Image (cartoon, rainbow, N blue to C red; front, side, top):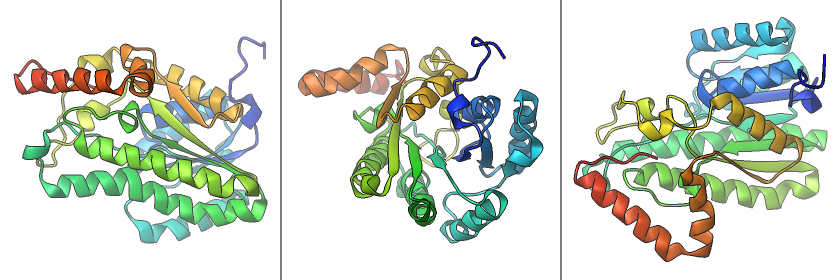
Length: 286
């Protein structure tokens, strides 16, 4: 294999990597690139048929079938976590990396949004990640090594309109995993937060409305965002280098990360204007 053909995931050859939200989007793209690099993969999501499709694509990308475990998992089924960890240990005798990638977004104003929608967003995006991480941590502690990652968002750094629940969840994710990093570093366990901007996935189509249904609508910013496969390569490079916070995206939304730090007042004003435009019916997407 030439240098130009070598996968960015080559440093992870033979490593056991568990990816949730593996059936589509960033998760699927991560699976494909890790497969090219020779990692052993645990593929988790709710949709088993889609996971099997991803598994087949991983084999086509170079994985051996015995290096792939399809493990259907609903991240809000907290009681299923210990059994899932046992299955992974029985299959691969350890877990080198957990990438908490499952999640969903929202497209509704607070005043219109039912409380159950907020509950769903927090359970899927926050409590599910915490529950699986807690189940995996003892394995990594016993090994004396491991790497835990979570897919957050630019929305975990700034407050965007029509995303009150999503922003709350992603801010919580950032806080939890930043805090966890301080607790486990001395054990030889790394923690990375992934902060994507606009990535071409189905996140907008699957986002929840005020009453909890999927919007089933495309958004120009998402459709014009970074390719998911390119996103995966940037993320994997960051994970290989041990980067603690991996920002990934190529659009103007990424400038909000610096703007929020350097000029929060301008950030607030900018997003207040975006909310006013959305209320006026001119649309807004992030």
